[in-house]
Length: 241
Picture 1 (cartoon, rainbow, N blue to C red):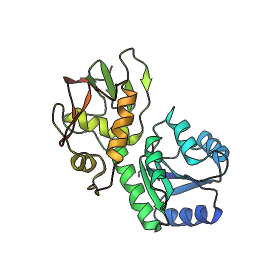
Picture 2: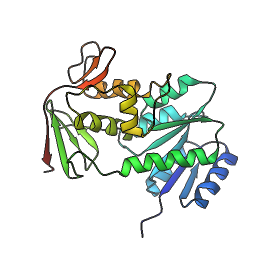
Picture 3: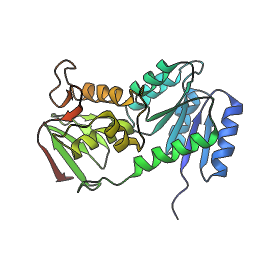
C-alpha cells in the first residue's frame, strides 16, 4: 500500500486551515497546519510533507519570503494561494518558485485538483528514454533526475522548483526544437494557456538566471521571435555516477 500523501497548509486564517484540512483528509490526504512561518519551519523539521499549500498574505514573513527561503535548499512542491484582485501576486509567486497558484476565493475541489496535478507531475517518471537514474548533460551543465537539481560546470548544486525542473527537462527532451508557450504549458502542466498566462515566460526567466544567462543574449535557452523558445546545443543522457 502506498503511503498517504501529506499536505502542509500554511495560512494565518484558522477557519481556512480547518476547512482545507477536513476536505483533504476526507479525500485521502494527511495534513498539518501552520499559522505562520515559524510554525511552518518547525513542522518541516518534524514532518515530511509532500506538498505545501502556502498563503501569500500573512503577517510577519509573507508567502513570497517563505517560498524564496524554501527554494534556497528544497524543491518541495508549493501551491501559492493569492488574492484574485492582485494578478501581480501570482507573477511574484511564480518568480519566487511556486509550482502553481490558486486565486482566492476558490472551491476546495479546485485546490484538490491542483494538488493531484502537481503531485502527479512531481512523481512522474522521466520520459524520452530517460529514467530516474539518468543525468542529462548540456552546455557543461548537468540535470540530475534522481536528486532533481542542477549542477553548474563547477559541480555546484543549483536548486530548482518543481516547475523549473519539469520545464528544463522538457527542453532537454526536445533539444534544438522550437516550442511555443502552449506546447510548453501543455507538456509541463497538462493544460492549455489562456491569452494572459505568462507563467512559462516567468519560469524561463528564472531558469536563465540559474543558468547564468545574459537575458539580452541568452545562449542556452533562446527566444525565437513569433515562435517561442528553443534549447540550443548538444544534449547527452548518461547513467548517474
